[in-house]
Amino acid sequence: MSDTVRLDELRRRIEKDPASIAFAQLAEECRRLGRHEDAVEICHNGLARHPGYLSARVTLGRALLHLGRLDEAEQELENVLRGAPQNLAALRALGDIHHRRGDLPQALSNYQAASLLAPNDPELERAVSELSEALARSASEREYLRARSVVAALEQWLAAVHVTRAQRSA
Image 1: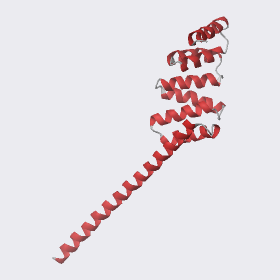
Image 2: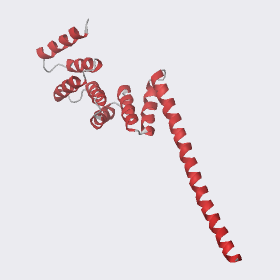
Image 3: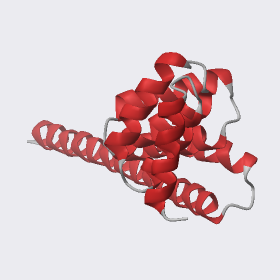
């Protein structure tokens, strides 16, 4: 079945029964096809009738993430995790949000939690590995810079001691 036919079929179901939860399927299909604005609008309309439908909130969060509306996406996904703390898609998407923002420790935490739910997912394994390595490098670089700062301060102190000794000798 073509994507257009599937979308039309879902739209007809919703028109026939506006209270139908088929809106979530329609929104997810739109999201998968890259029609993120449509997915957001469909989710907002459907969630007005079914505010507790968590899978629709995940779709909304993921569509918002793709559109770069990170604060809104984070809020939706956090709502999902309050109701379903082991929601794999929400954990992964939150990891993506934190990764985009440069909050690598939080991104790693979300990816690790997701990885526990999907232990053989190569994409998650790669993300966890890359972030772990990046954070280790970052920690090493901070330690190196801190050590350089201490050495520079000690060199200044030592130079001052030498100046003071030279002045006393003269």
